[in-house]
Image (cartoon, rainbow, N blue to C red; front, top):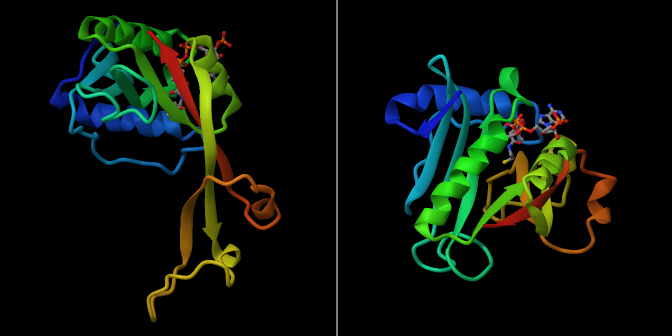
Length: 193
Ligand SMILES: CC(C)(COP(=O)(O)OP(=O)(O)OC[C@H]1O[C@@H](n2cnc3c(N)ncnc32)[C@H](O)[C@@H]1OP(=O)(O)O)[C@@H](O)C(=O)NCCC(=O)NCCS
């Protein structure tokens, strides 16, 4: 297994790897059909086996404090994507991608990584094994079909919302739990370097 910098020719392998990895998570429908690019510089690594992309990590990082991360002092990096192809899971690829990114981040002068993930217990366990700790959370709520009812309006005449995806940052999440089937806690992890 080789960990190396992302090359534009990896794009389809990157998309496939990420899609397959996310199918097993609460982000199953968060499909991208091209690789994300960033305003700021980024650590973009690929894990490759026999020419196949089997893992990836994208970390956009700051040259100006708080220009990318949501919190903290000094220069940090935001993990926008970390994924390992499910056929190659639990072989240490995710851990090695983070370790390689940490080595690069230290050379650049970053002091922390930030990452947001949903409430998949096994993914949270993985972050905690890599010495990430929870520093914040809020909720992602989906409104679909009858869940829309009278509660969600577009506010624009003749424009009818069919489905909605919302961020809830309040304390009373229980008010949604009887009506909405799909509610995720979105958790912010931080790892000090
Ligand atoms: C989370 C992820 C990056 C871990 O990569 P990995 O290379 O499989 O993980 P590692 O080999 O470094 O670590 C293995 C540990 O991760 C956890 N883990 C990984 N896959 C797991 C699975 N399918 N079921 C349960 N635990 C799992 C376990 O704690 C495991 O340790 P164990 O095998 O001793 O029980 C990878 O599973 C993945 O791509 N997940 C989907 C995408 C995602 O959720 N990304 C982060 C959110 S943005």
